[in-house]
Length: 372
Image 1 (cartoon, rainbow, N blue to C red):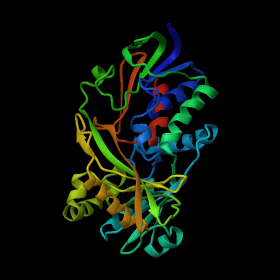
Image 2: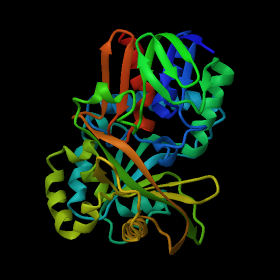
Image 3: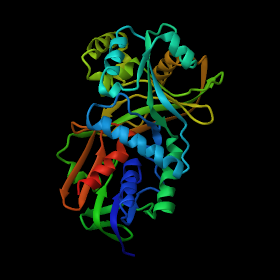
Image 4: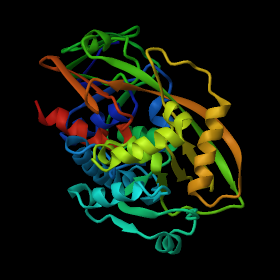
């Protein structure tokens, strides 16, 4: 039952699938080994929001721009609909306005606009601009439906790029010449471990010296009442002190101090608002962040209420019907937004440690293969 490929990748989340794509684009034979019968981890539980604006300056921002372009190329080939494009960041507090203006003046703010609440309301009538001070418009983002996009991407890689998937097989051993599962040995000239949130499996020994942990987030799917149509994603003030592209600006310090006094519960729960829309009109809304080595599996109704309050403050909804609730888990730490370890030639371990897998994985995968 042995098999042989040029490249074996463990993990069929977005990081693993991006590496499968990058390897196949180079004409290599590729196998992906996934412990579950389908992807059920962080990659299908997120917003599907390919975020460029607000990413950390430098390599993360550049990766996001490149990954956004690859998503735009791959999505139609894989029959993955683009749900909507662009981003509005609504500044409700006066101290948020200098942050938006400072960001717009950077290289990362190219093509972004800071507009008045009145202009934002004209261009985006779904925004709740009552009491708002300004808004930032970014044209750079796109959004896919994660729970549909990830399996469609895997199916397309199998059908159109010849990637072989071994589903429901846990990897027991891995090295530079292949992997072993309970069913077979798979030989390869190169192995890429993409463990996602599984930091204690076969990738664990190679990550032992990295200060990695996990963060748990709460998310909801809601039906707006009455119905409304978002034309883009929505964020607000709390995102400006969480996303490093904004938070690293000197102007963000005063906003952070203000929000620490005004929104201590939300900050303690790691909440910042993202709202995106699905084809059926429902909104995916979140999220919160609670860090731990082993995240508590029980969600808080209080945290969900806080998230929905922030939604009503930024989006013109009168009421919502909660359709679904769920939690997600992803790795954090390591001092960077992604960690790539090459313990020996032919073996790479790649972990996104910032929740930016959907936004950066394609470019990160290109770097993995470009580096040797």
